[in-house]
Amino acid sequence: MEKSVDGLYEIKEIFDCKEQDIRSFSPLTLAYIGDAVYDLVIRTIVVERGNKAANVLHKTTVKYVNAAAQAAIIQAVLDVMTEEELAVYMRGRNAKSNTMAKNASVEDYRKATGMEALIGYLYLSNRFHRVLELVKLGMEKAGYEI
Image (cartoon, rainbow, N blue to C red; front, side, top):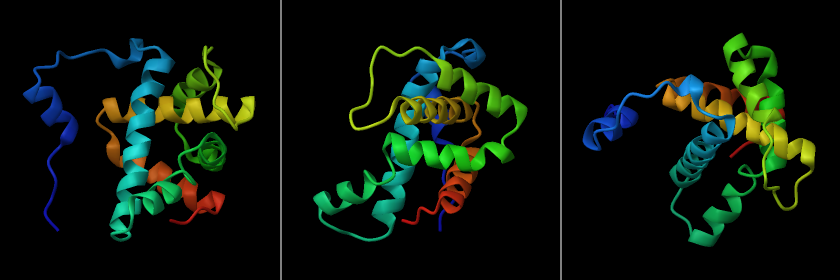
């Protein structure tokens, strides 16, 4: 398998993005990018499992990209998170959002937002490998298999 380039670096380089202090980003901004990163990770895994009809791919993906699943996955890895990761997660979980997910409890929605904030923070900190470690471990410990 060919080694991939650093996608975040490539985006910043090609689009001339200025260096940002992500510690100053709101937790909902971090969750915004984290939601997309998590979705991309899950979609990549689903597609890599085989070429299927788009509706089958979508049905498989939504089993993992929903508030209840994300809440279970993040809950399963709280004990292996660093203090920094836990602090970012808590900021995201406690953030006041003007929207609510349909078909999700408030508790699950807040935990999912915390997870997305953490993923966004790690991604923007160029720690994508840690994102993958936490997602993989969380899925295993929570009993999810793709």
